[in-house]
Image (cartoon, rainbow, N blue to C red):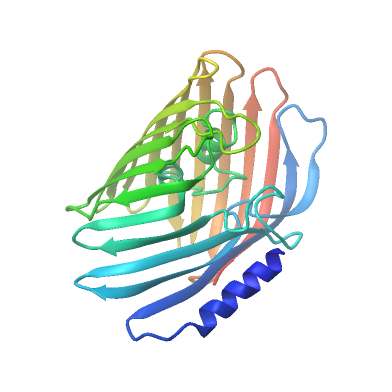
Length: 326
């Protein structure tokens, strides 16, 4: 069924009328690596070939149509894939277009409005202010915010409306709402981002009340501050998040610090992060890596991580891999 949906989409896009002021772009990224994974408390490591350890493999289509007067109609259709087994989605439970599926309007004067399934502003800020980006395999920031039982809600929200302001001398703001549609309540978020030369910062608020599935999701509230400064010889990153689980009455403080050091066509990467909860196990994660660019679209990487949960043996993982963008 998934193949039929993709084929129908490709045919429809390929046969659409060619307009002089319209464009459609096909794009994606495939990330494959080999390595060893040992989770905290496990007794043995697992050797394997994995998809998406540094960046979740994905594909998609995006386009725009000039409507005149500086206004454009836009769309995005993006799905995840598991290149190691040739399957769509991050898992068998993902919808086909789980990354983004939206239409909208964009204007330099009035900003951008997107309606559909949108990537969350919390996820964008988290990946933008740590040296390992959106790596679910190795970024302490991504792991602590999105896979450690702290924040609820996915990295994308369905049934959502996202508005982003124009750029005001380096500052952009956004407001984000996902309709509840009878699933426990709605999700809301707001963010502000400032970029000026080597300095960048972002503040994000997010509240999740929408269950979004058969298994109830805890209500959570997040405040997160982010900053980075590029000194040329080294770029430094810092993040602090305070998460309240309103259902379980547990608070989490999350600290992240990292560096990216350019070395010719490569970068040395390092990050430390920790989770300090008011109850339950704390977590500390160290990650180091080397990322070498063969071209603008292709890079090779080697990365290693030590992941510790209170009262459990340390998790130790490493990967050597390749990413190609198209």
